[in-house]
Amino acid sequence: MIFNIMTLFPDMVENYFQYSILKRAVDAGIIEIQTTNPRDYTENKHKKVDDIPYGGGAGMVLMAQPYVDAYESIEKSPKSLTIMLSPQGKPLTDEMVNEFAKFEQIILMCGHYEGFDERIRDIIKPVEVSIGDFVLTGGELPALCLIDAVSRKLEGTLGKIESADEDSFSNGLLEYPHYTRPREYRGLKVPDVLLNGNHKEINEFRLKQSIERTKNRRPDLYEKFNKNK
Ligand code: 21W
Image 1 (cartoon, rainbow, N blue to C red):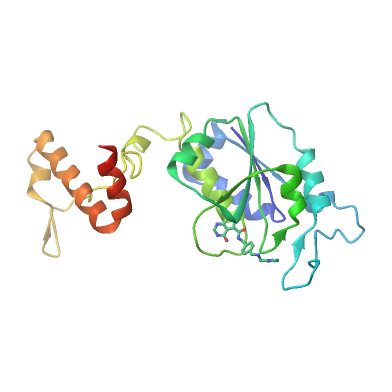
Image 2: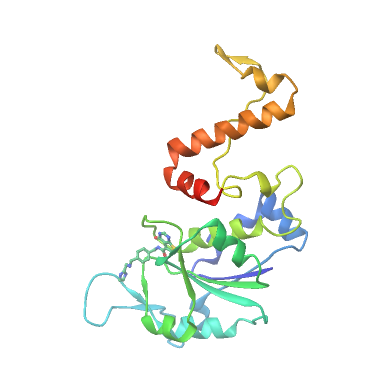
């Protein structure tokens, strides 16, 4: 899977892929990261990428020309998807991540506390995605979130140990509590059922804990879980 990140700050995103599971995925050739900087495509001598908004108001607006030209310079595979990271986008979910994981190439368009000139949307027609109802300074972290979430769904990225099937959201429930040694810490004991080796009982205990947790913390997910049953 090729990810092409359009950003004015390529250094900001490149470092993320030098660590841990994603580094392993890059080294194994499961994912490939490319960046494209619209500043390299400006046609004005000051390499300007933004300008003041028509009609007035605060903030700057990303100019269409550098962005569209940068976009058109990217080599596109037949199964490619273009996503604009934007506070106005559809909030990202695990189901959306699963759909995105079916593409061969994803182009991610980041802005940086600047609106996009609307004609960038008119011409490129990207899918617009947000990562939640809070305001960031740019689309780079959202792009990394999306790439991270998609990459771990790809065959071979996760080892057996990190397997994705047991995650929260894959079964619609939050995770059960985990314990490791010692058996007692500051007077707090590991639940006996986890020590008795009866895997049927252990699974029942964990499922009950998952359901209880989901009910208390995420009534929205709990309701969905009950409906799907
Ligand atoms: C924040 C962009 C505010 C635009 C006119 C000129 C991408 C994001 C972002 C950002 C504005 C996501 C303005 C959750 C997020 C993102 C930066 C508003 C200011 N108006 N998901 N300038 N939260 N954020 N425009 O912030 O790009 S996905």
